[in-house]
Image (cartoon, rainbow, N blue to C red; front, side):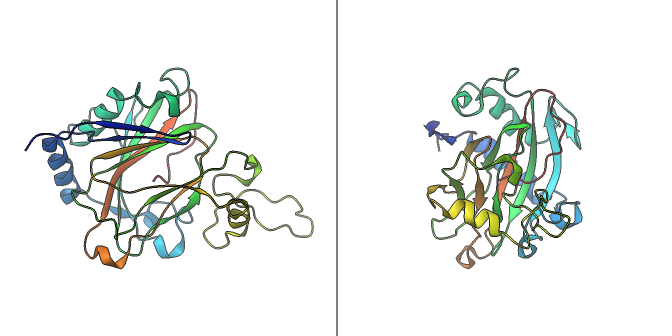
Length: 252
């Protein structure tokens, strides 16, 4: 069987490259998922980044390109294939992300698994992220299995609502509450996104890379029961602006 041909799709909010890796590289990366020591996100100091019912999402260690996290490229693992492919594709998704060295400097890569019933709430990248990326590593997916990447066509959400488009409720002596995680109350996010209520979806098609423009609200639809034991397996991370200091948390 021949390797899949690359195909580029671009919008105002994201870029897609299909057929990113060779078939041999896809197999190596899928083997990596079989042997990876995953942990639940609620055990990784990420409580609240996912809603309560999604706190069992599984996450692997974080590798960095241009910066060390749990490890740094080259890692001598199949992660190197996807990291190198992202680096080699930067010119293709520059209209979405900008140029390396000017608009972004380093990026992260981490494996994540969503199983039946799990997804990710609406959020957007932190201000020091030029954007984020996700690569779908599962070998098979069906259009009825859910897990779509959802992207709202919104640009004018006030920055004071923070990453999760939500603020704590005002109280006496606390009239201007800070932005917070919306894992228990998403009233603000709902009002902001339902005002127009339009956007795009991207199916988690195997061997697909999606690069999301910084500031674009996005979420992950829950994986449906029809997926059975099939999991939504992805590698993803964040492109950090020069001098950025914040941590790398949720991803699509």
